[in-house]
Image (cartoon, rainbow, N blue to C red; front, side):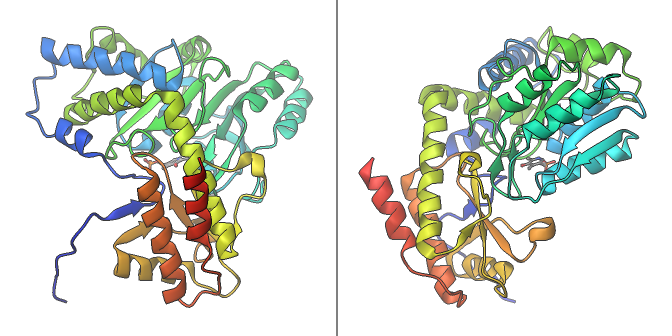
Length: 390
Ligand SMILES: *Cc1c(COP(=O)(O)O)cnc(C)c1O
């Protein structure tokens, strides 16, 4: 096959990794420094402190050189012991993967079933915890924004379910595809461990992941018996006090993180969240204009990071994605797990503006025609009308 140059920017409209802004790429493109130097300590202090505003916390946030999966594991191994009972909620593929990881660690997981089209049912969690009068359940783990389905759950409601049950279980939340895209408040919502990653709303390349840690989670970590070495919070926090890490940090990604935090601060977190809400609404109007179905069946749970779209029976979502990539140099998210081949996902998070969205939706609309998928060509116009009206 002959290789040929493709002009213009690739549209990376999968829901993570997201497009990395030029400012962040330039910040990363610098000499790596001695990670035991005073210069490094200043960088370490700056990013560890700066992250707190994004998590909406006063408590420590630790950074692992790892994908988000590492931060999933870190949350569990630092707080729990072999055989501990844990509740998780089946919102979709990512909740399923976190559950599988917990099983491999030897935890006793109760996986509350879901149909992948609805948010976490806080009332179900409340009744499950209320029934657990002996307080055997040690943790409730939920995914804030289920990236396989575009369904976002109400974390404040899960918190209040735990409180109404008067239950001491830890609350752990995966915000890998919601942090810096959808409203999230670690302290106010009483979350014990927040899990996040660099490559989605934070606009960085893959390679960093995070745990925000409550006092209660930190206290649990002193008695937790699951084996842990690389992920040990105590070693990390001790080194972080002086701006350092217990092993070689991903220095260049930290340069990028410093720049990304600066950008979020310049735009203002509230404006960042409002921008994501606006682009999500425009996207949903486009989907309705095409006459296609949004996977999420609860309007109050629509995701602002991505929209998952269900194709009519017999249509191949991966063929549509293939045509769009070949003709328009745009990557869209594939259907995951039981949605494979039936669903495609439009990522509208991170470094994104009205015209990026317009281009993205135009690529989808043209792709639907080229792939011969029955639809109406009224999606882009509906989205543009919405964008132009406010
Ligand atoms: C992307 C994602 C993950 C997986 O993160 P990796 O960086 O691929 O390990 C986990 N949970 C959610 C909600 C995600 O969006």
